[in-house]
Length: 313
Image (cartoon, rainbow, N blue to C red; front, side, top):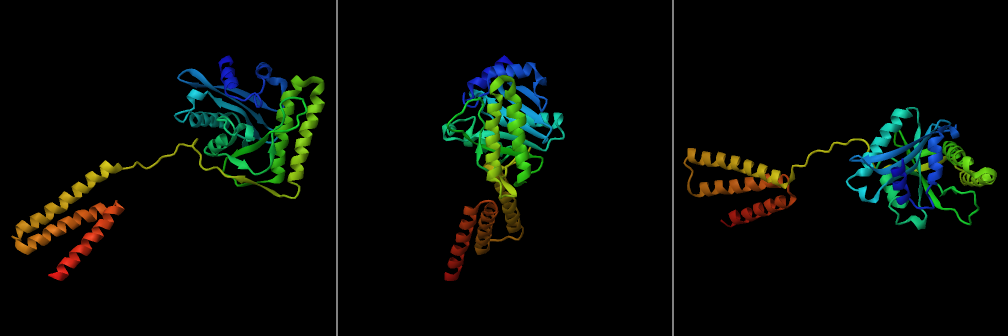
């Protein structure tokens, strides 16, 4: 757990980072929030922890919230994210088979525009593993019981068992309510003491603002996922240039052998033999043009040239 938290701290902005003391307390006291089941996951590569994931299942709305997911900078290559995403997906499906949605908040404020673990870069990656972006103005909740003059902009990414393009406004508000009051308030009430009512008031303001934003809307649209790389996908094997060239040569030799054999069998000589050679060349060009557009153009030019020659004769 200690190594996973080191990776977490090293790769997460202090503005977005949950206190490691709080995480350790919740890890030791899982019963402290009866509204959810939390999981704290160390992500290993070759036996070494290189990432950290924290997620919770909220049965009131059958929602899984991915609170944090980070991978150490030097281990973000070679499709590591997609491998870990597949493993996390399997865990979710095994432990929470009744879930309806998986959601994740992503900071999109200009302060995080160049951040590799938040912002547009993460939205792009999440859309490659089946998530869609909910099209609403989304403000991230504070993680401290203090009044700030500004809130950070964010996006809510959502994933269902099937690809979705919209949600009923009421359904989205239920999910948002769970995020604010079952997750944030349920987590923070153990640490804020007498400031908890003030923090709850902040969450209420966010929820009322979202209600007002959707007051005249029956539907909330979702920018769909581009693909889902957590599902194994088989791609047809490419024959490649070398393979194609080999096939062309074999077909050409086959045609040439047949025509030369016919020439020998019928004792073809003179002009007729020359015509046979022309047919062999045209045959090879035609075979090449089956898979190469440039060869197709060359074949057409060769045919036009032969037509002009024979017309002159």
